[in-house]
Image (cartoon, rainbow, N blue to C red):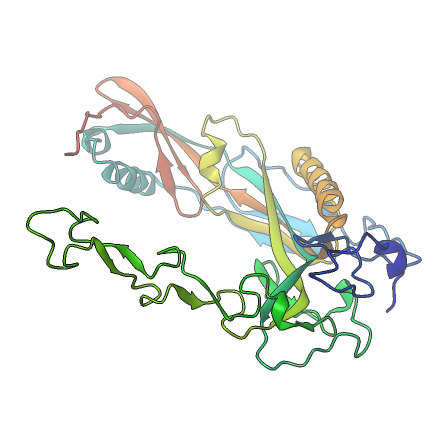
Amino acid sequence: MHFGYSAMYPPVMAPQANMFVNVPGYEGTVPGGGFLPPPMPMNPVAPPQPGPENLEWRYDILPVFLSCSPTSRIFWFNTEFVFCSIPSLSEDEAREAFKKFVSSNICYSEDPVTQGVITSMEPFNTFRYRLETFTESRSTDWAHKPHEGEPADFYAQPAPRPWEVQATPPKLFSDHTEKIRVPYTSSVKVAEECHTCHAAGTEQCKECSGSGKKACPVCNGATKSDPACTHCNGTGKDRCTKCDGRGKKQCETCKGKCQLLTYIELKVEWKNHVEDHLVEQSCGLKSDKLRSVKGKELFKSSQNLVYPLLGFKPQAVSQASEHLIKEHQTKYGKTSRILQQRQAVELIPITQVNYKWKDKSYVYYVYGNERKASADDYPETCCCVIL
């Protein structure tokens, strides 16, 4: 497939003539590089819009259970029945989760766990919507390496444009960066153009400033010490170990080859952008705690471009889906190529446990499939000083 690249990459002022050559199609590449927007088809075709028959949640005939008893429910999606079971939390399980939470805090006494009495347990299950957008972005920059006999293929044939260069993406929804030497952009710089050593193959040692000697490590360069330093015989100087006393060492730029292979380097970055939305729950548990746990997965969909969930109740999930999908396509579609999107809905179990200890009422929460516990007002703590 061919795109209108001439419109995408207009000619820009050429880089410094004494450092780089002009490569057709890369006239705008300057030291430091820059991101390149993905090419667009000449005549883009709008994708078909989803209809109720193929992408709609049907809750109109089913009970909504955002704050109901955590029992088994049935969902209807794509004309298929999906069985979802959220088991009730027993008192023994709630107490065991509480015990693990307390034992992980060295300043917490176990008395409220062993002596406290559970008075009631109330479910506050909540939904989490997650959107992942897997993108590919490309940027170019001038690069060089010591010339080790590679052919200089500049002008052998036209160089492929940035988005025509073949690059193998990693596993979907994983981050990865790859640097590729663009074919037919390599040229050999003559010896005198090595900008560090000017064809000498060596450069002045920075450690000793080219003198080949450093201050004696024993006497710290004290030439008038009495008695005289036996390490340097009173000279205050010692041989520089970095350059072996020569005052020069191999050029770091050309590695002693005296020539450089200069080329355009393409940097390809694959990145997975993830955003969550939690439906507000009224039990008082901080939402940040829910980000580290998993829930019961109700739905997952992966497409090149996903569509908002229609008819989902609570409506906040539908609204979050529509907002995040639009935001991702606007934010990442202009600077990157969207390769795949994935959206999912989870039901996170939350149980508020009310208990009494020493005639006072307290609360803790058990949440997530992992059954983590949290108690902001734990009644029996001490001040510990770790020495």
